[in-house]
Length: 166
Image (tube, rainbow, N blue to C red):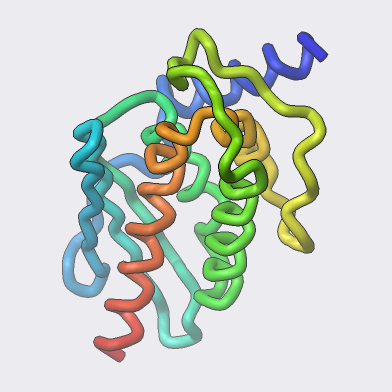
């Protein structure tokens, strides 16, 4: 469905060109965690501020990298801001599940120009991923899955650090 493919590409490019929640938060109280993909050089920095009720009251992202890693970080920050730690962990699971649906399939080189969107990808469960659905075409290109999940792994690490500090 070419129309949907174009829409998904536009969503990715919009988040890449105008990232949400970009910047830094004061540490402490915020937790700062860095993620790095040595295979391609993508970097993501995640700041999370969590209140006494275990709600992510604020999040900021930074770093540099390809459009997939940076768009995914932007979409992630928009999706989890204001959620509880438990809900954020559900988002992490749902997104990682979306990225592993076609594990083992061979794809192309994963360039943005070549990336298509698979309209038959299964639902990610009870969590509504919203704009993140635009990234489901990444699964066709295994080399790019790490780009899409980098910010999510970094967020999981930040939540683990926040829990150990509590």
